[in-house]
Length: 365
Image 1 (cartoon, rainbow, N blue to C red):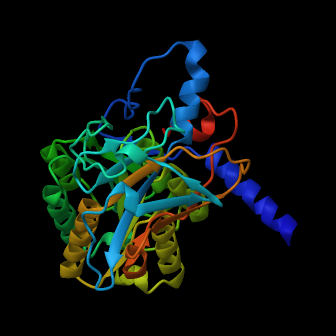
Image 2: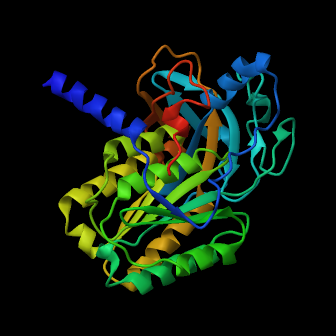
């Protein structure tokens, strides 16, 4: 049985590395890579590799017993444990406020205690870093599962785009059997809305192929990133398994919000997959019975984005090259009354990873 499991994992990895989903794009070029924060010479590659790969980013929702978001927490209120080792916060951000840096990136072991209670927007010994808002990647199901509610779904997505915080940037993708980059990441809402209105209903649904592409594109950008998926039914055309896509999102620290309809809820396999992917990445799954509930689901996602805490840390030396478990806790009395939602772990990239490794940069054509 274990041998079969290993073979299945190998096959999934092979598909993940080999597949190149077909893309229809309104842009002549693929999305640009996010520029590095600092240019370095070849001799500095080891340092850049260590900082870029090792920083772990977490999007954390804190909820009280009544289901309300908890605001006003400080860095010293959080405790992060990776496997069994306690970690030190490197950056802290609440909602749409500006982030603060608690640890010098060149000295990840530096203690942040002197600025542990700094508030966003203040220096107080911490190095202030700029905030560009969240990067929101929307993926819309235009397969034949969406025929009946197509226009209503377009309206719900358009209202969601208009309602996002002004600091957020938005990218819009649509999919059936193929995937379209209808609007690359931009702060121009009109460009995104034109992409939404340009979509037409298609054929079969290759959700996980499309989600893989979106995650690859999102991984090229720095800062907070989330993926919002509107899907009306099961996947019947993908070549990649949902487990591999979900693990990639976990390792990249990208929450996935799944918004679906009653039709998908009636399919137990899709329901289980949607709930598992969203929960494991720190997002949420919604199953809307009608247009009003679709609007409510998008409003809930917007509220979640505006109340998330963004935490990051540089992991302590850890010999575990496999799955690393992450536990985020609140300290003191707060731990008794509040609930935390975030991803539960990640798998580090293999030793010797470079930006040209096919696993990370395979282009989708």
